[in-house]
Image (cartoon, rainbow, N blue to C red; front, side, top):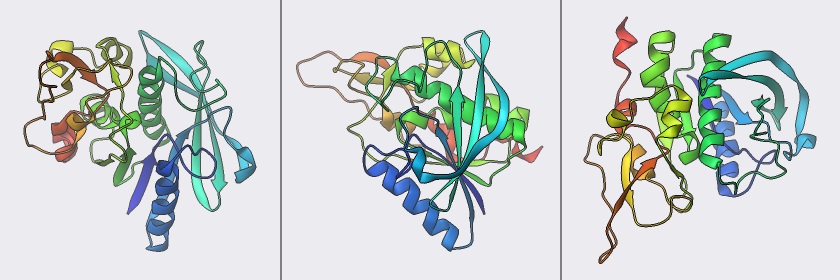
Length: 252
């Protein structure tokens, strides 16, 4: 199989915790078993480039539709201890990945929503058609939604998605403005409990409805702290029906 990992980390070039180790180790093991694996990552300005061999620009002008306009990206390629890695560098006014560290910013949901869309735009524009797109943690939870809702009809209709949640403690909740920025829109549609909405009694900056992204047809979990009213929040996560099966346009 041809597998593309879309992840926020990969050891040792961009590693904060165990997620980076898993992405690297799983990719290596899959390759040893005969599969073709590529990894798509953000190009952080703080990543450890000494672990990348042959780092070079592979796609100069990747224009990613965003917020009614478009943001130009440069895509780099290099080998990380034998793994084929692509690094997406957005030239955005917000300097999404040029902040000296990986996480911990108020706009993390926007940063990684953009990365999720940029990764799919890169696959589409370069003619890459993996059998499986493997996404990791909340940071790439929008990839299955974007794939199903926007990109299946544009040429990525036969790709399947595997979404792995490595740590429920790290979550990302945002507002419906992200839907507008990504081009998904329709907050009343995606805000349904069986799609992307969740409930939380914790502030959006520290909680997330990642359970809504689990690729299953079971009802969404609704979590409420006794004695406190639950307020609706928006999960940076995939609509569960988007990942359960191959997109309906796959047969075309």
